[in-house]
Image (cartoon, helix red, strand yellow):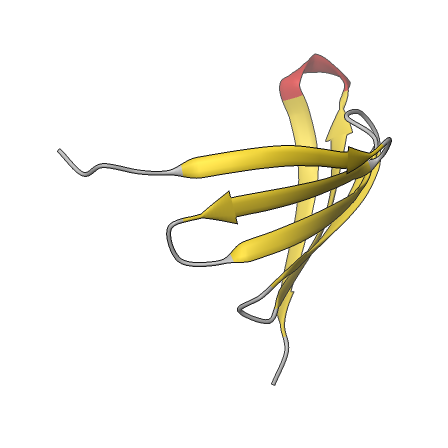
Length: 63
């Protein structure tokens, strides 16, 4: 069984610093609704939580 590590720190309202074993990322946005994440690995994610357990996620990588 693999061991994982993930820590999320709230910097300001609507801004979080996420740290895991491989990288770190900054998330901008509220808990519900649209939010944008930029990772140290170059990955950018735009996502939105929708009612009823549904959601939308779009990922892009920086070249």
